[in-house]
Each structure stands twice: as structure tokens, then as C-alpha cells.
Image 1 (cartoon, rainbow, N blue to C red):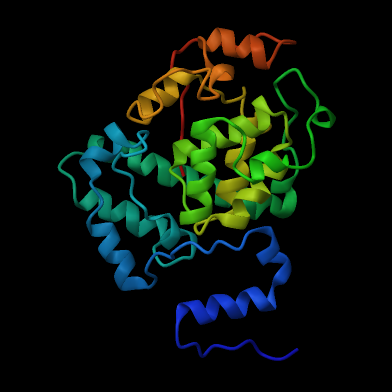
Image 2 (image 1 turned 120 degrees about the vertical axis):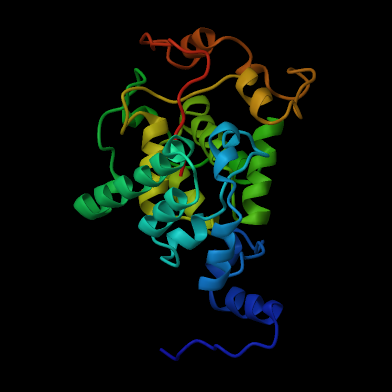
Length: 279
């Protein structure tokens, strides 16, 4: 097999070449999002502008102070240890960066699980804790989800963001994952593979094990949410007529949503805002 070309006058020429070389991939989705600037210098500059003080308080909001370090960590341009050390060296109190470092710890943990079980990250680590068995979930991602035409405004918006930017805020990743697995009852593997097709920071360990956490095959209970949660963390951009906007399936308390999604079992709902952890 001949070596692939490496000399391109423009990015557009490179994209056209890759589409011709990999027509099957181009057929799945031919949208190529803009890439973050690569390299060590860009990574260090990105690290220096992280707002450590605001991270914990705002990280769950779609317009919050997230780090955007994930591509550099994913490809080894920055190590978890040096990001941790930078955070500790640039704060007056360790309490200010506790959550930030905790998130780095989750990424490290996922990598260690991956190193231990390898391709086992594609298998259910535990049984679903939803009242449904694995064979009751569809194996294939529905076409309306893949097309971003589910009729649920905030879901379709996040799908388009995924396609056009190659990135999603972690909270949006969790909303999409829960929608696929719990509202549409699709196996998490289909969703995890879909994400890896498009995420520029797609890391198999963090991606798959987070999908399993949402699904409940790597956690004590499923992750789900309601419309109030979406409205709170999106700056109320979707506030309006829930029925007209396709949100009716998300209206209600956590208890109501749990009974709707998991009618065979009782899900503990001891908080109005389920705990989240990021990537």
C-alpha cells in the first residue's frame, strides 16, 4: 500500500483527499469541524487561561468556565500530572481546585480501567440497573438521532454542535447519552461508537466508561434528568411551550421521570439534581 500524501497546499485540499481515500467514513458524515490548534505551545497557552476559581461553580453550565483541555490531554500533549501541578501551583487554596483535580482523577481512573480490561470497555461491565436486560435495548442507533432530527430541540441542537464543532460540553454529552439509552432504549455501545466517530477529543476510555456510567452498567443507578435541569444549565434558552418544543417527555419531577423510564423498578431519587462528573 502506498504511503498517504502529506503535502497539501490548503486544509480544503487535505479534506478532499481524505474523503476520496476514505469514502465509507465520508458517507457516514462529510462535515469536517474546525480543529483546535495543535502542539505544545497552544496547549500551554490554553492551560494558562483556565479560570480555576470559576470552574467548580460554573462547569455544569453550557456557557460555564470549562477548560477545553481535553484534546491536549487526549493526545498526550499535556499530562494529567502537569495539569494537576499547574492547578495546585496557581491557587491560594487547595479547596478552590478540589473539583478540578477530582475530574482529572476520573480521567486517570478510566485510563487505568482501560489498561486492565482493554477491549472489555466495549462490554457491559455490570448488568443494567434499569429493570431492563441488555437484549431489550436496540443495538443500532436510530436514524433520526444520527440525523439530528428527533424533534426534541435541545437534543437536536447538541447533535448539530457535535457534528459542526467536533466537541460537546460534558453536560450535553450526558444529556445525549441518557436520551439515547433511557428515553430511546438503545444500547450504550451504539451511542459510544457514534460519539467516537465525531469527537475531536474522543478518548475510548473516558467515552465508553462514561456512557456505561450513564447507562448504569458501570454505576449503581442510571443517570437521567428532567426539563428543569436542562433549563437551569442552558441559561433558559429552551424555556417556552414544552409540548411545542418536543420536550414533553422530560417534563416532571425526578420521581415522575423515573417511573416513566424505569417502570419495573424503584429508582432512588434523593436529590433534585443528580450528581454529575465530567471528563
